[in-house]
Amino acid sequence: MSDFEYLDDDEEEIISKTQIKKEAQLLQDLGIRLMEVKEGYWKNFPLSDRLLTALEESKRIPSHEAKRRHAQFVGRLMRSADIAEIEKQLDLLDSSSTVFQQVSSEVERWRELLLTQPDSLTDFITEFQPQDIQSLRQLIRATLKEQEKNDKEKQKADLQQRKPQFIVKSRKTLYKSLKQIISSK
Image 1: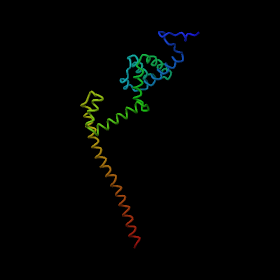
Image 2: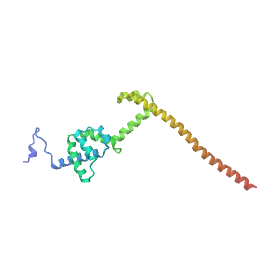
Image 3: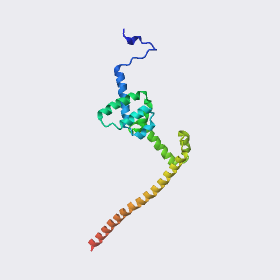
Image 4: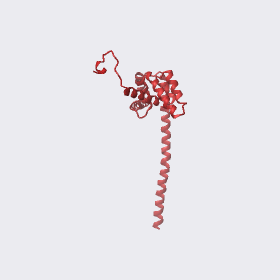
């Protein structure tokens, strides 16, 4: 009989070489995605100092082959990282991901609520507990003022756009009237 049939519960499960290679490739691909992220966003990721240093070094590597080898190194360092959290943060940066879409729609919903219903700020504070409530209030007030200003400018622009159309219409009407008068004589 083979070794697979006699595994006890306390023994480790035997993983095939193919499975190990697939997992290593997935970590390397995740590392490549991390290497493509701008440096400023790395602070949002739960990265070890060594992994962060390797990512910073990856920005200075010009050669394609060296980048490939460095991606393998980053993949190796990814073994000790919190993969689920890193994937979540990467999805938040990728506009095609469902996580990004969900967060964006929720942000848009809250933005609309906060700008249209002043009482919704307390709901937002209870649900998300932001640290700087005062600056949030100031930002909402500034946005409302800007919207008010833009509405006035938009109305002014609409009037300016209608005026030339009105002039064109009146010019055409005048032309038709003059043509009619002249042709009748």
